[in-house]
Every structure is written in structure tokens, then in C-alpha cells.
Length: 270
Image (cartoon, rainbow, N blue to C red; front, side, top):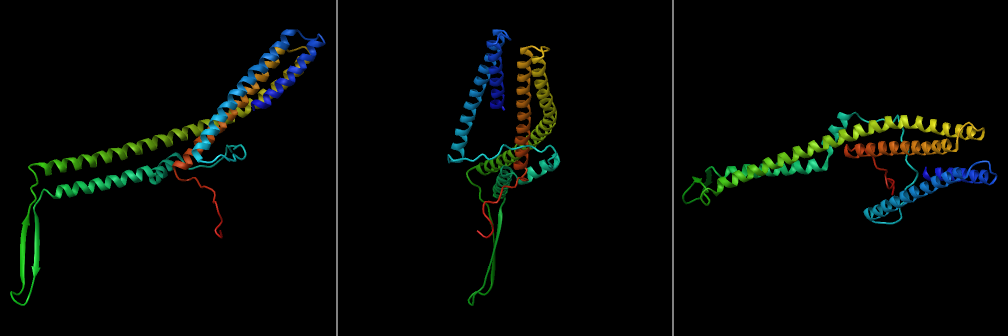
């Protein structure tokens, strides 16, 4: 978008340069066009630097340098997706973090029961028989007292661990619910903003073309034309930001709720 706008600015700059040479327009108009071009070149250089930094970070994350980004993704405003509650329920069901915490919670609960069982006596029964003394049965009552009250302390510690695991699971569940709902609201808002931004972009482009024609006939100033072109650039960037914001939120929703389907890498025959 910025490269395309820069080309348009450069075309206008050359047009104004010819008009100044022909003494049709003042030198101030040429300086204005030159300033706008320089500002846009600076902005483009800044964006290119940010893109290079992000690309290098991505290369480090994936572990190889040859990355094919493919086509620029586009959002279908009519894209279908589950409801917010369905996304929340699915995310809570398939979250690896919650599965791990639930397993830890069950483990600590079992440790608590084992520690508590050691406080009570154990009744042991044994039966045997042989040719000399015949059958016999024995019973024994066994109690492990431990070191003073250490066994009670162990029970308290196991209970505290079980409660801590329960709280960790509840906190993780709350964070997942919050993340899903935030992304859902972000997606809906970005999608609605995209619809409005598309109309604004089309309108700004029409205004820019109209101002160019009116400038030739003397009904608009050069400043009006340059401002209209800047508004068109701003509207295009806003539309792009809304679209990519909606795509990012949608992707996070699908991944966290396990609705995301990755493409198959190899065929069944292979």
C-alpha cells in the first residue's frame, strides 16, 4: 500500500515540477509535493525495517531461512465460526495446559489420600495351612507413628498441595476463558471495522480522483489534492490493519479451541 502511494506521490511530484517550469504553479506547491514524498519515503523505510526485523525473528523461531509467505491473506467477512460459548467449551476441553494441570491435581489428591491413610491403623490378615499344624489364621494391627507429629504435618502438606493444584487449574481456566472472549470481541469488532473501512477507502479514492480533476480546472488547490491523497493512504492502511487484526484474532480462536485444521503434509499413499 505504501509503495503504491509513493508511486502516486512521485507522479504528482513530476506533474508539479513541470507546472513550475512552465510557471503555471508556484514553487511552494512543488516544495509541498517534495516534502510529502520525502515523508512517505521515511515511513516506507521504517516499515521495511520493521518487516526485516520480524522476518529475522521468524527465521530464528522456525529454524530455517527459506520461508515462503505465499499470498497476502484476505478475510472473508461472511466467514463462519462457532459461537463464543462453543469456542470457550472447546478450548477448555482440549487445552494441553488444563490437561496437564488436571493430571497434576489428580496426582496430588492421590498423595493426600495416601498420607491421610497412614494416620490410621492397618488391619493385616494372613491364612496358611500345612500337614503338621494344619490350617491357621492370624490377624495383626499395624500402626506407623512416625517421628512425633510429622505424619500429621505430611497430611497437611499434601492437602495444601492438592488445594494449590486446584487453584492453578481454576486460574488457568479463567485465563483461557478470558483470552477466548477477548479474541472473540476483537474479531467481531475488527470485522465490523473492516466493513466500514472498505467504504471509507473507496470514498477516499473517489475524492482523490475528483480533486485532481478539480485542480486542473482551478476549483481545488494543490494542498487539497495532496491532503486527499494522504487521506486515501490512511484509509487503505486502516482497512489493512482491520483485516489483519480480524485474521489474527480468528486464527487464535481456531487454534485455542482446536478447530484449526492444519494442511496434510503427505498423502495417505506416501
